[in-house]
Image 1 (cartoon, helix red, strand yellow):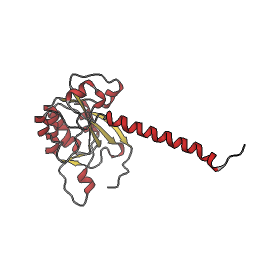
Image 2: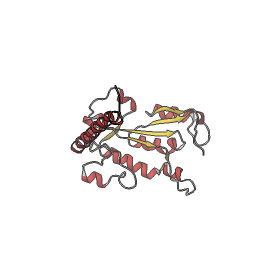
Image 3: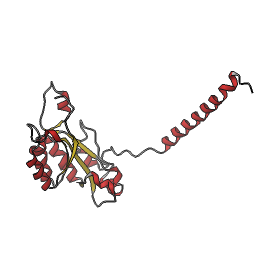
Image 4: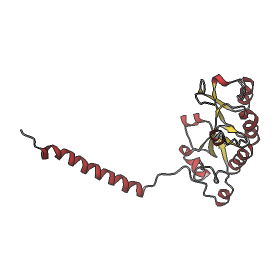
Length: 202
């Protein structure tokens, strides 16, 4: 049986037709079934007007606390690094990774006043509807300001966070000590290992 150029091109043409039909179907389906966006601000207008996340920061709050109660898969997760006032123009990355203590307290107050309570990531092992709106607060690297700034404010607002530590940095200047970690853990904070040593140039 001989195959000419037209015969060889036939399967390719058929495949392209089916691909076009499939892409058209996906476009039409998505147009009529918008995916739920867990990063929308609360629908409560009064709460939204005072939302400390709505100015320069992307809001990671669910559509409303009620949604997070009934659908725990929409739990917002906030990741912090430094809780400090830092304005070194020669260190733009450090500035971007920093949240001032005043701003952090404002955010915690907003969460508390809008019915949010913290859970830890292991909640996803067996998620279930909750009587409150859940939120997860994480802190990377184990900097000293986690103890000096974040920890007292979390206690003030009866919230807790999970702190991911750089193991080789524990007890070195600028990082948490083992005694501080034990104190925070005894107060309800949770800890995990981020990595053994930091690969980020400082």
